[in-house]
Length: 233
Image 1 (tube, rainbow, N blue to C red):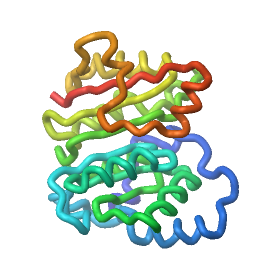
Image 2: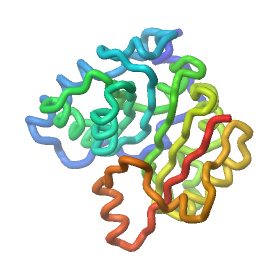
Image 3: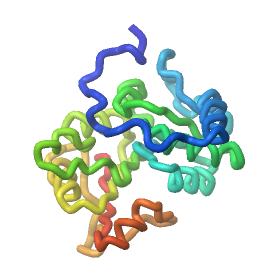
């Protein structure tokens, strides 16, 4: 059974809707052409050396789960051409925005996937990633929906398997309950150690941070973002 069809311990419950407003014809064309070039093919085994996924020479590979409109992902991939980046976003409108940007500013060190992130995590070889970013994931704010949050014991196990020793898991959110949830679960997991020397650390954006439209809205509405970093032991 190939990786694309292999049963997973997860469902698509980690994310909500797949579509927003109808995308414009130009975006639709960019989406079709872009996915043909950038989309990962999970029907074939992952290469033992993940750097082979990219058309340019890269030294390390990072993963961003749920990149929204792709502002942060495109910026960091552009500014770090020596690293390879894999971005995952099941929301069609967000993927269309990134593909439209890539039509004008292509990147040889970027690959994407437009479905459940756990499929990619289960496809990747052991210890292949230098970092994972989970930035402003769907908070599922109602307590009865907390089980649908992406940060879970099962997914932290997945992270631990694919992350190299010393790799960073970075988590950003403006939802206090999700921040506390992530601190609690990562604190209980033997593979991760929170990197913070003082209280102000978790309110200080990452180096080279680009504020997304979502974060700008959160700040306007009075919600303070938190930026957590966990080291893979």
